Length: 108
Ligand SMILES: [Zn+2]
Image 1 (tube, rainbow, N blue to C red):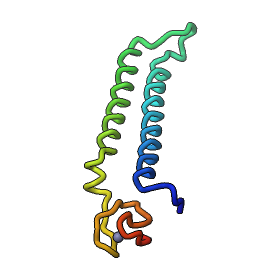
Image 2 (image 1 turned 120 degrees about the vertical axis):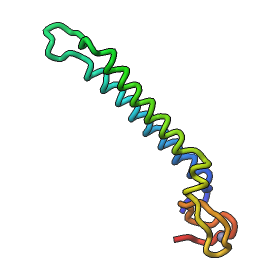
Image 3 (image 1 turned 90 degrees about the vertical axis):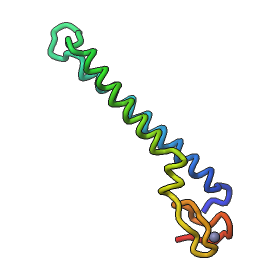
Image 4 (image 1 turned 45 degrees about the vertical axis):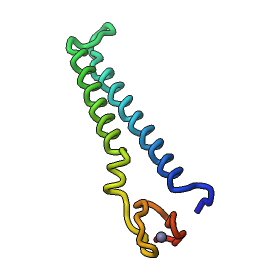
């Protein structure tokens, strides 16, 4: 294990990585809605008549994913579902901790 990385730093990095993935998905969906709203069969470059609806729908879906991901990553959600107890000292520790922050007991 890396001695300099505390569990807090690791969870922070994990959150940042998750946020980056969510933003990538959001932009992909908005981009996809723009591509889908384009009329590719038209001889002249043009958007479909319902382009506004398709793009709006894409932005709506992206917004729902973004909001859902935000709420899923909140700390109260983590404290409720992502904690377990140290087998050595019995204190509450993070679900993905590799070592107990209180007694330094190694965890499987
Ligand atoms: Zn412990």
